[in-house]
Amino acid sequence: MTSPSVVTDETLSFDVLREQLWRAVIACDDTHAVALTRYALGEPGPADLPAAAERILLELIAPVQRRVGLEWAANTLTVAQEHAATAISARCVTAVADRAARTLTGPSRGRVTVACVEGEWHALPARLVAEILRLRGWTVDYLGAQVPTEHLVAHLHARVADAVLLSCSTPPQLPAAHTAISACQAGGTPVLAGGAGFGPQGRHALRMGAEWAADADAAHTLLEAGLDRPGASAVRLANHDLPHLDDQEYTAVKRSKRQLIKQAFVDLEEAFPPMAAYSAVQRDRTAEDLDHIVTYLAAALYVDDAELFTSFVAWTADILGARGVPPHSLLPVLDSLLRRLTDFPRAVRILAAARKILTVPRPGQPA
Image (cartoon, rainbow, N blue to C red; front, side):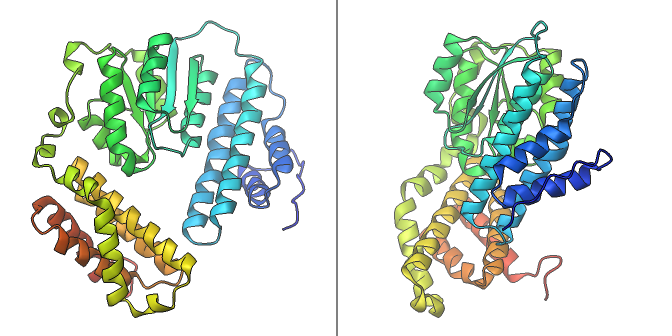
């Protein structure tokens, strides 16, 4: 691709600016992307800079990054392109943050720690929240992606915070998120949870005993109001929040994950003849898909939420369709899991619900 030039018409709308940034990002042109970000920020005075910087983060960079995810899902961007685009978006965030840092000299509203839960590599949403809170006067310890719980707790012991903000973008990290929430609260630190992984309206975060913040603005509002430090009752086992875990279905699926994937692969080969012509790369990709399916099933069992799994299966079917693989190829996989997990009522219920969405047309699908 050719590198886009930065248009410097002062009357440009944010729609045009977003399109220009998008072109720079997918062209892997970080120089132009950063230059465009700095141009869009302009030269506001010290009093206006925080608000201007926040607008750039939320109305320019964040929408472009969301588009990156959508285009990857539609198979118009490769994984490499998605990674490169995300890295460029992070550079743009840094450019805004560095410029704004010069004016952030007032008294701090308090200290917060922002971190992604263990296993969560999607760090940009947490980074955006961290920078917006800084712009609003908070002292922020931003720990980045994939923070092991024990290291997060050690950090909180060393640098006491008014709250820890935990980001979880994908449901497979929910068990790790629950562990982190409980550990932070046991140490006396309030927890604000955020991210799509916690489900609609943060329902899983709430069940795990955390406060829920849908975005940076909500987090700021809750922090301003003040969060009570957890007491002795914060020390609890996972099944205190999620009593269904007593049936051990989640544990059984997690422990037998390798065997479930191996058998599903064999069953898929028998039921889906096109696999005979798959290359080694395609077979590896199929094994990865099966791994994701079992992982999401385990996550759904952990929080007892069939919709978590069915929505993932629907998304996977759409991804496969975009890549030329018939979505019905998922049926032998679900049937394989049903046969192996027949003694687990919750797993059977969740798998049956997922199977139904593959056999009953969804809105917008041909009958």
